Image (tube, rainbow over all chains, first blue to last red; front, side):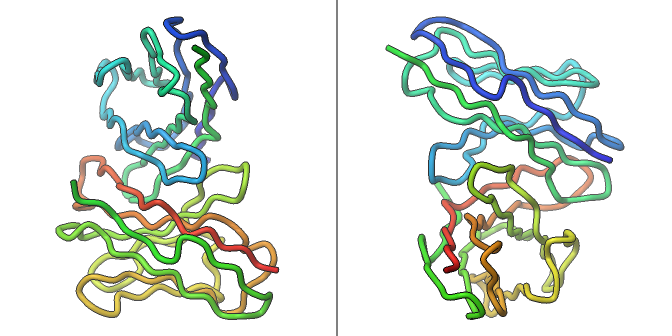
Length: 110
Length: 116
């Protein structure tokens, strides 16, 4: 069965303290892996799409990488405004639906 | 920047009542979706819709649920007889296409449904 597991569940960082979030997946043929940011009571906001192992995408303080079994979201020198839940989702071949992980709740303290 | 809009943002309804959640997807998108998120749980797929018909649905999407594209801009989710366990945030989403490459899905801000 297709599955997505994110770790850690929660992460507290000091402002400027870099770290990484993990998304492990098992899927019958990866069509795409997606990272979203979700603020409380809001819809997921698109960050990145990764299609194949070795691919990397960057946006401001965030960088997403992909291997055949997992993806990492690296946060460099985070700021308090980066505090949110970060969601990982995968899409398998022949399906349009996304399988979401439970998310990592990031709290960045000033 | 184009966005998916949803109404209402919050609805409280009595158990057994019918509810319609409305969405306006991004205008040039062809695929439409409903997802839901029960408080504290994962975002779960309900249904995808393309070319005026359902293309995929999950086990959650039983006979109590239906979707419709009544005109060229709106996309609706109807829950015929709400149950307490239907209380959740419902997200509408859309994507440009559903071709061979992975398609980015853009989500609306959600409709929070509370069934009492």
